[in-house]
Image (cartoon, rainbow, N blue to C red):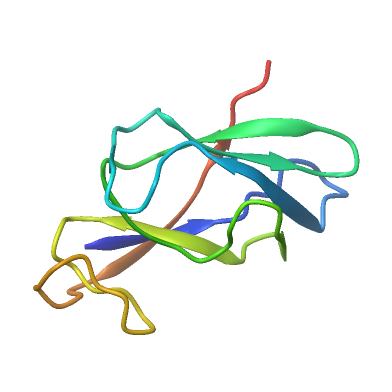
Length: 107
């Protein structure tokens, strides 16, 4: 199953975030709890942890780009899965999508 990586909503007034840096590249294996990317707002910058384990299949929002909260910024899943839009990480079809939102890692 492929997971939709969403732009998190880190505060009540947050409407959008900017990906400052992806900590992994497409094709890299990510463990649950790894810092997946850094997101900045007008008030703060935080790392977003992965809530799933698998291969980073596709990055939809490159570093330096901005998206609204809850927008899909990438996909994480098993090697070989395809993601919407035709991007693939080898051969097997997408079976099921499950959304998750990274959690705030700041104290």
